[in-house]
Image 1 (cartoon, rainbow, N blue to C red):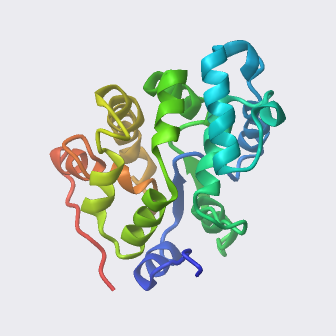
Image 2: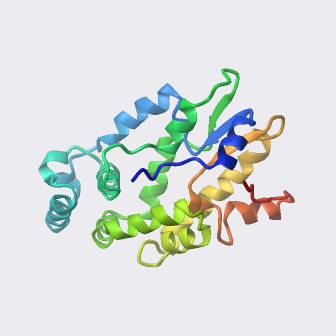
Length: 231
């Protein structure tokens, strides 16, 4: 089953916009170069993790990916987390929405912008989770959770997506602050300038939309009218 889709309303809104704003501008060669550099950690995992953490991560990797921790020792823990999460989709031909939006742009004059850099995202993740918290989170996650999120996304069930992602088993006050609230507030500061002169298509993760500090409420508090786009 192909879970990737773009609804008619999304395609129409995208086709009629002049600017594209992503969390990170993946069309920027500098960001792509940074992605390759950030994949590797500053030190091997065997040097920064305790023996218990290293063994826990090894068991987790073998169970979820069939790989051993020695095979990815040079990677950062963030990269390992991404590998495990990607495997949870159960597919090898995974499409990334940001890259798809960039690929289907027909207007050469359309501008691409990112709210933040990849390095900034790594810093937010580092603030959100300690190494032990990240390993525990990965141990408690499973493929069924991912399948539910995918189905809720296809059904556009935003409240259920937000509920699952911000569940206390997945996040705590600290991680919600750094992964959602702080970033949402940062984005809102940049938003007016980004959409001042041209129609703009913003593509961000669904969990950023709802909540007391979600993008929708923050925009309304700032005086903007926010309405859902329907087919």
